[in-house]
Image 1: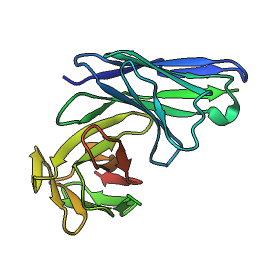
Image 2 (image 1 turned 60 degrees about the horizontal axis):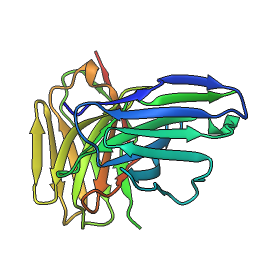
Image 3 (image 1 turned 90 degrees about the vertical axis):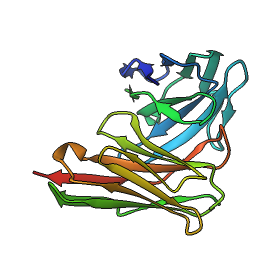
Image 4 (image 1 turned 180 degrees about the vertical axis):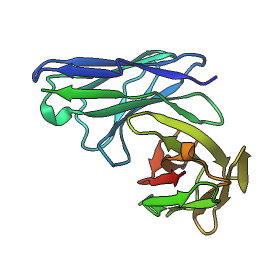
Length: 115
Length: 112
């Protein structure tokens, strides 16, 4: 149980285009979903926290107009990278959390490359 | 500031050894602490979750301990195997439903 999927696993896009990444909790309802970014050889950096039906809460320094997050249902959250630039190239990971004991389950990640 | 530190950053051991990975946190008022494993280019796999009221959790060859007073957690891996090679991350949480604060990870290599 507690499986989280992400789609796509890899995406290459041209500079200036937008890319959408989906995160789904497959066998539980996620009241909260989190989006992380990870650079090579570094730990995870939290970008934003989203609760179903509410606006996402962004961490300091993360541009909310560039990284659009939608959490329309208890099993789906999406991250859209708008007007992508090469510096947005990174590994993006989502996690989903159900109510108590508030354990987070992580997706397999999406490798974004902007050319 | 709430921070999590993991030492060492990298560790290489021969197969069969028992080993301990260390995690320390600056704020002892944690809600719970999680240990994760990450394989290269992959997401995180949750290994163990310890609630603030617990002192340890066990799963197979893994045992995680929690000492809030000293701000430390350890992950003990018994009889290590090459398949245990991965990066191990610990993360603390300070309220229910709150965000995880991650350490930088320990990259473990188990040599056959």
